[in-house]
Image 1 (cartoon, rainbow, N blue to C red):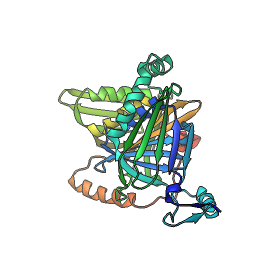
Image 2: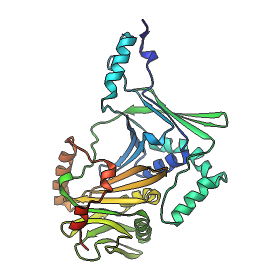
Image 3: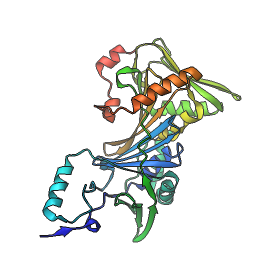
Length: 365
């Protein structure tokens, strides 16, 4: 009979992938929100989250299908004593059906810097399949086709609480290892949640059209952005006014631009300009955007990015609107209370981009 000790335990995360350039762009797209990130590991993949003063949050979802190999082994609940191989095997089997997750905090700046060298090199080494694909896709409207080949292989490893998050790059037999210090996840930080039963506006549109609007809005150097959804054309309006002038971007109900528009009433909310612009890089990578706003004005901008081979990954930005002083105290209290309640059911990312016939019938022409 074989016995294991804590030193024999398998790593919590052992993952290998070659899509270094794509992972780099995703991490860079959310890095402007905060200098620190929370990494959540589960059987489905990695979730990288950043937030700024509980006013804006971004979540990048790296599904396990992006990896050449992906192994998640939750730590045993009683590592402290000697355990038999039979108990080890039975415990591992019982945990396979659990939705267990492991979370820790890491420097976002350091993580992006690790990928910067190899991720940007894949775009600049003359490999047309990477560089030209990325350039062509942006000229064609923001479509991201990730470079999935190349000579660089990346491995991620995490051994558990107190261990560093290790990222290793192997290029032509030369290995570079980055060890990032980790800290315990502060679970007092709660997600900014949308009220699932009170989504006032839902818009699914092609990402390149929203990218054009964001680029124009940035030219005004405004402090705020006004977002309107109306029942009469134009159905979706973005307005910014600053010292350099004003820009108003209007979208009519055109299926070539907006695939789905659902709004029960005309709605207007105001958002911090600089915070809203943190989604710019993610929108550039995306093929489609799901823009949802609930009755409190909380907005989700979810970007669906095309990885290739029929695979997608998602980047989700959440924003709180700007209120006056009284409204801010009331709304923040309501949203904080709501975000501390665990949702019994969660819709998948794919559901957010599926517009049913009923949705289309309820939308304004």
